Length: 292
Ligand SMILES: [Zn+2]
Ligand SMILES: [Zn+2]
Image (cartoon, rainbow, N blue to C red; front, side, top):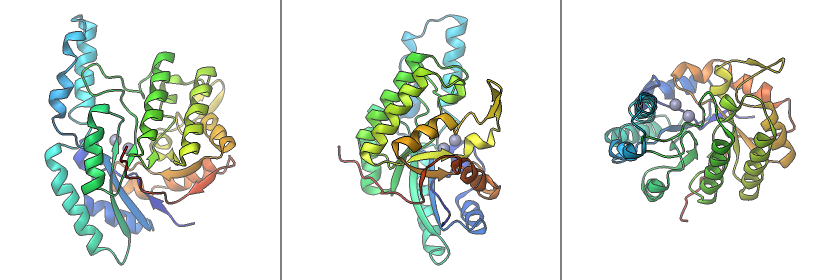
């Protein structure tokens, strides 16, 4: 099986290290034959949008704390600056040419389902990028937005996660769904609601023929004890047992946030995890181009 990775970040998102050149060199050393850059998508006017919703936040100390942390977490340090977009894409284009004899390089971004930015995503696909992957981290992009990977998620947030994913997949803008089981960080125990949304997500992805990702970022977090068993927060064994049953295509994504993560045995650990289930592993996928 060839080794590919379409989930790669650069220092430009503010919480990863390594520039485009260092990443390409690490990917070549790791025997990766196809490499996709998928940094957290730069968004025009994002800071201004983040301030929206301020009026709806109760001005209690707790409300202010949540607001401040959302602003910091969802804002600076979460995604590439819009101004860096051109230089990043130029660098990737240059590396693609220079290393064409060694590795195939693609330009992508990892993006949330933000309704106000879907036209912008379409423009990116029309003009600048090969593909987008859906990383459904946040339910919106203002100061009250909810991070779906937080320590505790309630049922209402789980249903909203599922709704966002399904609406996003239906746009045809996203070529695969990254860490579909991100919500298990805060859900911890795979209960009836988790099962229900897992079936909904897997069935929709199957219907539209969109791969789901086993994510290396969750493996790097290490295992934790849940009801007497040691498990990764994600990839979730419960989630992928259902994906196997539904018959989804599964892709491995290292979700590298540093060049050396491309070659730290994460790929092999993902394969090992995958081998516990009856999964249809794919190493490539159709680049979807939206046009809703
Ligand atoms: Zn990241
Ligand atoms: Zn990512």
